Image 1 (cartoon, rainbow, N blue to C red):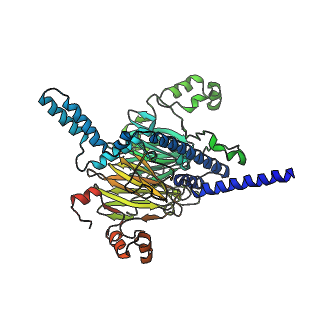
Image 2: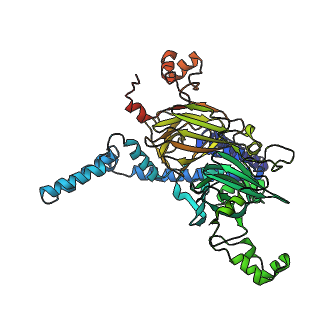
Amino acid sequence: MAVKVRLSLAVLVFSLLALCVGIAKSNKDPELKVCEHQCKEQLGYDEREVEKCLGDCTKEHFRRKEERERETRGTEEEDDHEWRSFTVDPAKKKLGQCLEECQRQGGGEQKSLCRLRCQDKYEREPGREEEGNMKEKEEEGNPYVFEDRHLKSEVETEHGRVRVLEKFTKKSKLLRGLENIRVAILEANPQTFIAPTHLDAVFVLFVAKGRGAITLIHEKDKQTFNLERGDVFRVPAGTTFYMVNKDENEKLRVAKILWPVNLPGNFKNLLFSMFLWLIDYDGFTMQAFHGAGGEDAQSFFRAFSWELLEAALKTDRGRLERIFKQQQAGGIVKASKEQIQALGHGEEGGHGGGGLWPFPTGGSSGPFNIFDKGPVKRNNYGQLFEAKPKDSEQLRDLDLIVSLANITRGSMAGPYYNSKATMISIVLEGEGYFEMASPRDSSSGSSMGYIESEGSRRGKGGQTYQRTSSRLSRSSVFIVPAGHPVATVASGNSNLEVLCFEVYAKGNVRYPLAGKWNVIGEMDREAKELAYGVPAKEVDQIFGKQQEEFFFPGPRSQRREGRAYA
């Protein structure tokens, strides 16, 4: 009888656990869903690594939930005066406090100067509202945006530098699905040489500016390829390569996306991996190995004992010390015109030179240029160039799309969303800002890096969204997860050029939310009426009014032109 009772209790407990799991799944944090989706789509992950990734997502979810609960308790304890202060425009409140201080100043002239300083500091001019919002947003911190300060110099000399973006998970482990990806930017002065290196990562480079050449050392030969703006080129993991900036006046600027190959081993069994989120695991790092070395990076040869090197190279220690200690200039050095000419014209030279690498059975081995086939979208407000996996064997097995948007000053791209691809976007030139609609957790208040948007407060139930937004400038990196509607706006001063590495791109569709062929406009008449609660004609008047495609006049351009929206 006792055994039956214990068995019944066990069944009851198991049923309750299953019910709790079911409820949890039905009310899952949308961002947790995104994180889990990225884990399952992660390139190179086996089943155990996927389980580990999912555990980290769960751990981060509970950490954020606890933070929100603490914030909620703190908010409830505030008095009525503090609560009312949130309903006042913060700028006006600060202005009022500043003017009160002016009243306590001495003479009339001193008071007048004080008032002018207050007004200059706290009164926003018309047209500066977006910049003010962007600045406040930036100060709050944004898990989807990385600024110039997040790029760490791995190689830096007076002639150039290589900077690597910090791990995406350092800012938020909700980006755990991007852990196996790094971003780097190379900048080299005219007529310079970038010393030989090999990486424990496969990478794809994009030439953003300048002219150069890259040489790859294979098992029994080498190849040299010329590079120019718009070129996309893949370098296999472990391949020793070196580069030159061939131009006599212009800097060489190259953006890279890298996939490290040294994934961490997983010795945990399946049961233990269910509780992996309890462990704070930093994952792997990407490493560069420098053969020559210099002031900024030691040669890896010097890690070996002199006795071993003497035997391996059949050379005495004195000569070895000289060769491995002579070069002190660093990883990027000035070269003579003759040296640059020699290094820039290898045996197979030329742009897109022939050869067997990296596909011995055929296919182009050289770089391909993203501008060659022309823009896929183009009007007076911008151009979009794109290279898909089907366009190049170098991209095919990486599940990667490379795209470049050149948004005319004062114009915008989007809003739109990607069905499957997550975008890692790098600002190459110009300034502007972006806005993205992010799902809001049902249990959250305002969370990290978000701006409360009009109408986002929850009513009786259901999903709400909040605006993720930030200013953009050169070298800014921002992440747009799959399914997230986004729009990017160029400032009125210059064009905004944005390079996108779109990962997990197999089968991706870019869905426009405004302009020609937008999703809402393609719906059935009855669907429009049922979805929006107004006649389909009214829906069509709104979503059918914009006749441009993908690129549109930006918010300020519309105001300057005095366009009517009625």
